[in-house]
Length: 247
Image (tube, rainbow, N blue to C red):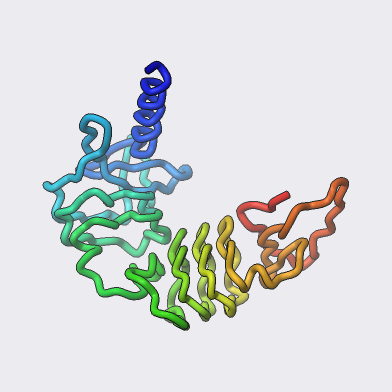
C-alpha cells in the first residue's frame, strides 16, 4: 500500500512539473528559456489523478512578444504538449517569431484534427507528419523550411527517402527515429543543429561505419560503444556538435 501511495505521489509531481510555468500573461503561460526568450504553454486543469481536457478554450492568439516585470521576451517556442488537451481549440494564430514547436503540442485539438494528412508546416517549421505514411514514400521538404521538429517522422516505418532543402538549420530530437525503411537522406550544409537520436534505428544510420559520425560539418554522435582509453581528434572543419555524443 505504501508503495502505491508513493507511486501516486511521484506521478502527481511529475505531471505538475510538466505544466509548471514561470509567469502568466492573459490566458497563456510562459517558461523562460533565456534572458529574452520564452516558450508558451497553457495551464490545464488538474482533476483527481490527471489533467482534463479544456473544453472552453476555442481560439488562441500567440503574441510575438510578451512583457513580464518590465522585461520584454520574444516568444520563440511552443512547449511540449502545450495545447494537446484542448479539444475545442479550433483556431490558433502563431507568429513568425516561433521557430520551434514541442512534441504533440496540438494533438487532440479540433484545429489539428481538421488538417489534411501529410507533412504539417507551421510558418517555416516542419512540425510533424499527420497520419500514416504509405509504403515506399519519398518526401521532398518544402523550400523555405528552416527547422524540422522533435519526433516529426518518428515511427513512420514506410518513409523510404527524404530530401531536406538548403535553408534548414535544425533537425530535432528523434525526428526520423524508428523509420525502418529510411535508406536515403539528403542533408544540406545549412544544417548546424541535429538532435539526439534523430536517425536512430534507420537503415541509413545503421549503414554508417562505427566511430565518430559527421553529417557535413556537424559532429552528430559516436556510433557504437567507445573502447576504453579512447582518444579522439575532432575534425578542424567541425562547426557544431550534436546534442549528445554517446560513449
